[in-house]
Length: 82
Image (spheres, rainbow, N blue to C red):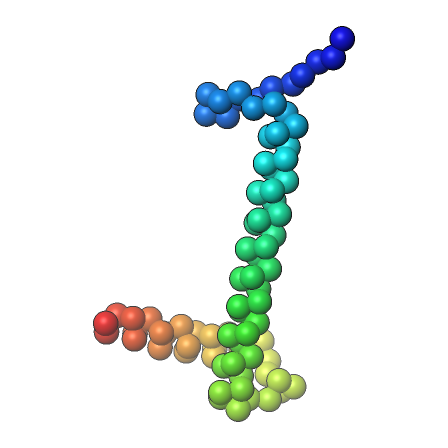
């Protein structure tokens, strides 16, 4: 005799193995999204550093935060002027 475990989601009965597969796919998708966000953030940072002709070796955390705030303020101002 075998036992099949079912879960209900929003009134839909899903066999446990299917639910686990969907959860695994969702987790994998979330990891891909996070990796893509990190890639974009790194590329944006590199472009700002290059465009501003900054030296990687001399940037401090407070300087990075100040630059980020200035870029954000500039972008927000530009967006508000549309």
